[in-house]
Length: 414
Length: 190
Image (cartoon, rainbow over all chains, first blue to last red; front, side, top):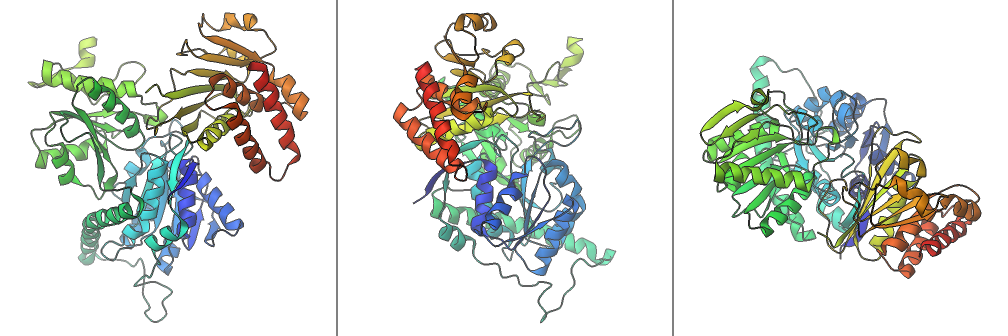
C-alpha cells in the first residue's frame, strides 16, 4: 500500500535519497536546492541512512568529489541550482565522458544576472550538451519517482551516463503538496545494489580514469557517449514501465494529456504543465480540441516520438522557460521544430518564452495562447511568435500568418 | 475549479505567515484533503512583505501559479494595509481577516469597497496572554480555520494538537500556550 504523505519537492527528493541510501554525497548549499543536503545530513545524523556526506567549499568541488567517488566505484550524487551548476561546468563534461553514472538533483533556478533565486530552466538547458541524461518533473510526486528510477537508468550497462533529475525551484521544491511514497523495501528492491564492472578501487584490475586522448581517439569516445545516450532511450522506457508496474504510475519520454484528437497543443516542461492542464480542461468544456505534450526526458531527446505525437495537430505552441538569444526562441523550440522538420513538416509550430526568473504562468495565460493558435488556423489571424508571455511592456515578436511572415509587430506599433 | 478553496496570506518576513500556511495545509491534509501550501519568495529578509498561499481541495491540484482571486485573505500585519492591495481579486462571497486592534469600521477605508465579510482580531493580545510573546501566526491560523470552515472545529483542534506535539517535541511546555491561543482566537471570530 502506498504511503499517503504531504511533502515539498525538496523533502520528497530527500526522502527518495534516504530510501536509495547511496554511498557518497558531496554538496555545497545554494538556494533553492539547499534543503536537499540539509535534509539528507539530518537523516544521516539521525542514523536513518549511512551515506558518507562530504561538505565541500564550492560546487566545483562538490561535482569533483562526486566524480571521484563515482570513479572509485561508489554510488554517488550531489544537488545544486543555477550558478552552482554553472560552477560545475568543467566537471559535468568530465563525469559524462568518463561514463560515470552519478546523479545530480537539480532544482531549476534562473542564472545571474540580475541576481534572481526563482525558477526557470536556463541552468539545466545550458547544460544540455554536457552528456548528462536530463529528466524533468511536474510536481513533487514526479521528482520523487524520477529519482527512484535514476540509478536504474544511469548504471545500466548499455548506458553508464550521469543523470540530472530536475524540478522547478520554489514552485515545486518549496510547495507542500500531497504525495504517495513507496515502502523502503520496495524502493531498495527496485533500485538494487550497484556493482560496477570497472572501478578505481578494484586492485585486481588496475585502470586509469580521465586520461589524455589524442586526436586519433577523441572522436571515438564522443561516438561512444552518443551511442550510450541513444541506448538510454530504451532503458528509460523499460525502467519507467517496471516502475509503473510497482507503483501504478507509468513513465515514458513524455505525457500526452488529451493530445490524441487535439487540433492545438502545447509542448511544455515542468510545473507549468499542470497549470496548462487546467486550461486544457476548461477549453475542452467549451468544445475546443486542445491538449498538451509534457516533456519529461530532454536528454536523450525523443525527436521521432515527439513529432509522431504532434503529427495530427494543426498548430503547436512550444513553451520555453529559457532564453536562447537567437532571437527566434529558446532551446526546446529549436529542438522540437527540428524534429517536426524531419518527421512532421505539416505541423505549424510557434515558440514562446515564459516564466523567466520565476515570472508566474497562469491558467488564463495558457488559455489565451490556445485561443490564439485557433484564431491563426481558423480565422487566418497573425500569431505573434518568439514573444515573451506576461511581459511588462512590449515584447519583441514576429507576426506570422498561414501566408508567411507578415511584419515585425513592434515596427507596426511604432 | 470551484471545489478548491484558495487562501492568500499577507505578512512580513519573520512573522510566520509561511509557517501558518504550511500548518493549515498540514491540518487539511490530515482530514483527507488535497492541499498546497507555498510561499512567494522575493529577496528574503526580516520585515519585508511576503505572501503565502493555500489551495485546499477534494480533488488533486495541478495548477502551480500564484493565487490572484482568493476566497479568503489573512493579513498578519496591519501595517501592510497601507502599502499592499490586500483585497485584490478577493471573492466578494469570501472574507478577509486582519490582525489589528482596530474595529472593522476602522479598517474598512483600507479595503477598497470590499463587499465580503471583514473580521478583525487582536492576535498580539491573544498571543501575549497565552504565550507570553508575540507570535501572531497561531491566532491567525485559528481565525482563518474558523472563518473558511475548510475543516470542522473538532478536526482542526485534533490535528493542530498533534501537529504542535510533534513540532515542539523538545519544548512541550509551549504546546498548551499555542493551543490556548488557537482556542481563544477561534472562539473570538466564530
